[in-house]
Image (cartoon, rainbow over all chains, first blue to last red; front, side, top):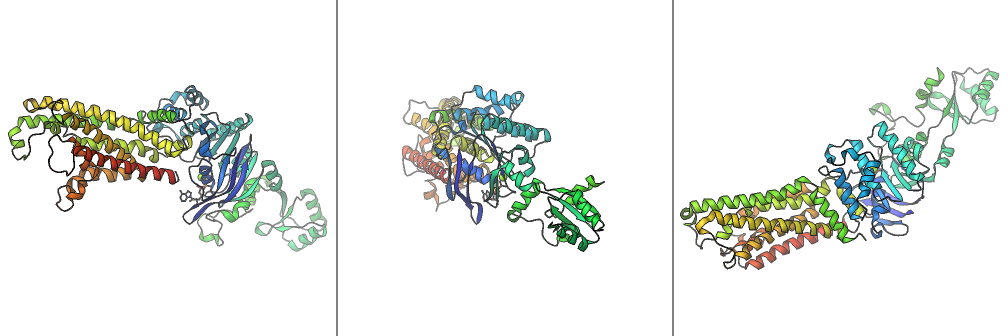
Length: 327
Length: 255
Ligand SMILES: Nc1ncnc2c1ncn2[C@@H]1O[C@H](COP(=O)(O)OP(=O)(O)O)[C@@H](O)[C@H]1O
Ligand SMILES: [Mg+2]
């Protein structure tokens, strides 16, 4: 089990990782989620003892990484940087790694086969596409048949086919009882693969909970109402014991509301409705809200007209997303 | 702990599997042998002219090893590339993830590169010596004469030590572009030019290449206030200092 104890990393003035403590549960896929610059890659490098923590420590089954005998047999990692020399063949890249950790040579052929690179095994990495490079990195991670796997943004830049392949791979690795720790800045990616979720923002821990729990907490639905007679509507809703909250563009929203009951209620009070639409908060929205305070460079600056391409504020995209359903 | 023999084997695979590094060694051999041959031949053909201003007796050994002046750059490039390519490609992180004991990694790498450089250097200087003696014809010498074997063997050690020095410097700078940008002008321009500037000359004598080259001379030229073995020892001290510096950087900096 990998445990982080008050892990902190400072680069000059920049606090990249800030007092981070959590455990990576065994035998499941744990999504390590955070906006760009949150400190995910830095944390992963510290787990491998590549970057030295300013404070705190990481233990792997109670030991430091540097004390692990033949570490590739225990932890396989795909890091941000590609890590294969362009002038070396895929085979030789895996061969030197295998030799350093006393992994049998046959295993090189096995992992090349596993990631589908057998045909280009003797080709130099310089000619590899992004996807092939990523497969080579994954082959390297799997080389020692490790029980813990760590992938830093493995789907970045991959084509849809490659993305599906990686998702399946991670699930099958966990199904074999391995621990998979995978970082991403996209909630949607994690929702599809992760069983457990660790969310960080600006180097700090924001959430550490099972995926199912995160979905339960954050997939609240609501109903949006729009009317030219807001006072009457609000009176009607409050009279029925509901607590509407303002939505975008002068609309009102009722959490966990039932569209049938709300429509009837409006009719009974003679309120004209211009919109009555069920809304589903996406996990992406929940993630954005959770990390809104910690994103490095806010894009939703007030006075958005001045900014070229503002990020939609929390919830404001719903109109467009719902448009299809209404028509 | 990663097992040292396993890491040695792995480092050997690394160095033999990249063409550019292998070619720098082949280039070292070709330059030293070809240039030694050409200069030896020209010397024989123009012997009187070439030697008329010499204060010292003719040094047939040193003449056949003339190619080292240029060939040493190739072995410096080898040292820089063999280490620096790991930084350029981001591979150093993969290497350290595989072998997290940084001293073990550096020790194995230095040992493999050093032994390879020594083997190539020795073959190169002996071939250059014999080819050069053939070209020198009647002005030639042989290994049985005093100090000749020492000079040829010393030349092989000298090339190896320059390679080790470059390895240490590259480990400190962690960039092959930066290392080449400093080492090549240093050995090719700065050191030779400063060595004839009167005021600094006494200091420049102790530069690694100046000191080490004392070992190549059968007939002392009077450029060095120390003997051939001391010269080689000074060169070795530079290499050791660079390697220690490289180790400290590798040990303490984030990869
Ligand atoms: N080697 C470094 N030197 C200086 N700053 C760094 C270094 N590595 C990362 N950072 C900074 O630390 C923060 C976290 O970076 P990183 O771990 O790469 O985030 P993530 O992987 O979550 O996008 C960023 O602000 C980044 O600029
Ligand atoms: Mg990152």
